[in-house]
Length: 159
Image 1 (tube, helix red, strand yellow):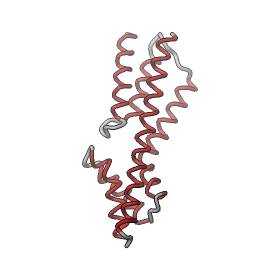
Image 2 (cartoon, rainbow, N blue to C red):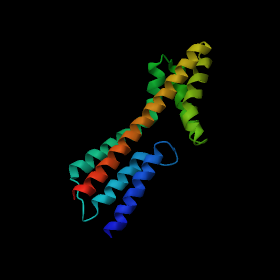
Image 3 (tube, rainbow, N blue to C red):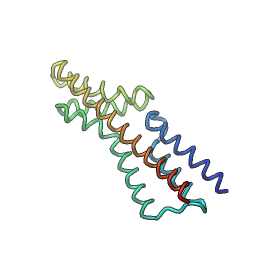
């Protein structure tokens, strides 16, 4: 049974890593599921503290994933129009996967700024900020899944 759980855990970790770039898969939660599967084997036991801390980090990462593009737009000089446009673009982009999730915040912030009366250059800057925020969120998710993979391998090797 342990071998089956380990194989399923590896598949979850790989799926989680893919989920960092494919919006159809919830990357970090899937990778965390892989860690839980390893924990349920007789071979490796993580502490409850580790499991709860990892769960909290995954929850925060999932929440940030939706707000980091907004922060990117805001810190690139976006107005309320651009921030709201970014949010609307993100929501609409969910219906046009996978490109919608990438381009939605950018287009939303850009259009929002134009509707708010800003010049094209300023609107592009806001859109670029939301795109950079999205990329930062993707890097954060990849780092978290990479950490889980490292912990998984280290736990298997040391036990």
